Length: 255
Image (spheres, rainbow, N blue to C red):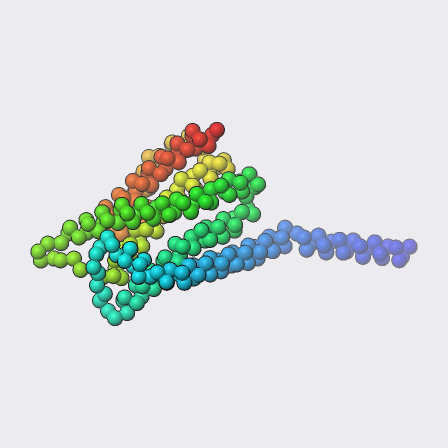
């Protein structure tokens, strides 16, 4: 009997130990470690994709530079290293744009485990749309907004004040125009996903429209160069995209 009692006590102690090891705190700790490991792995993949994209765009750096300089014409560099670093900036930025599908895919894959099967299906449909919207925002900015902005600033010259653009400052100006518009065009996607998983409704979107109009100008002031033209050119498309999202949620997604 004593041997049996000792065996029972041993089994109970092992059961308590297993229960302690599988406690919520232990699971949470492992979950955090797993998430951090997964995040690091996907960030590394994004960096590798951008570097590989930069290697590809390096072969076409002259063509890309001429394409970007077309709205401004002839530019100048003010110190010996400015031209070199400007080309390096163009190559890296173009590499990022080329690797955007991979970056978006890795971001989506990182968040997938947190969603239900139905939500994953919605995200799976929307992710290709996010890539299209990002490129659409870049095209809208470069072909419509950038020429207007450059023409406006060049019009500030006079007989005693002639424009002399530096290539470094010009590229910074271009990038600060392109990226905000690319990200801003993701607004319909974000709203539609939130509506699809039940976080917002068309009634709520309609209710907050006036606030979105005001916030759009604040976002335009934060993400664009400090001039009223740039702020308006970002705020108005943001408001329009919000209105399109409302129509999609009310008349399309509901069905």
